[in-house]
Image 1 (cartoon, helix red, strand yellow):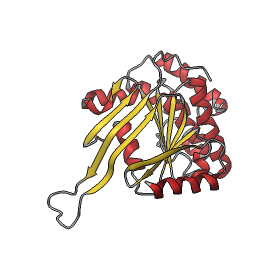
Image 2: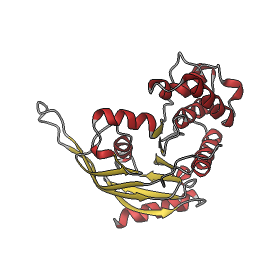
Image 3: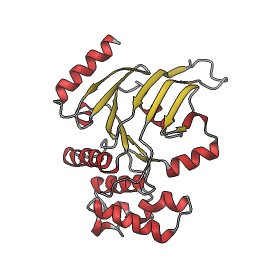
Length: 259
């Protein structure tokens, strides 16, 4: 893959991030739910990272806040020199289109568009030059082994192929940060392994941060570092690349218990 041209050093900093979901005032039987209770996280080196935790630990909330899809109650989020927590609604739209890429578990491809059309969609919405976009999109899909699938719609692609299209879409605007939300949840073990290696290669070749949220130790074992989330807080982190998934799960549990 072509190396990134970003001049600024990649950086992701989260400080004292808090988010509580409150029910409507008309629903007195429900109580507020604290999803994040003061998360601190610091990454200043390109690479493939994971946030791991059980269901309800706050993983998805953290990702949605970093992606600018929701706002924190308090705290700070910095992507490079960008204070994401302070952006206006219109600035968040630009941030999502130009500065980050998101890979979802459900692929979220547009069924009426072919692989190339899905890949270049963020740039089209951002009104970037179409000819340049199509060239970038073709190059990305070829690099991801989909040269013969450019004109295929999602229903004619396998799950692994659809997820590779989603990765191409996340990369088409040359983001400094990629967020992956349980990206292999709908893939078989073979396709999952290929995707984890692809995300690792993407981070290394482009010099960017790829942050994946997952509950699977086998996924986190492909990441150079894993942050353990428990009850809306970071319980600790560990060097995880190449660790046996069973050992990784054991160490993660120890961190969570000691938090």
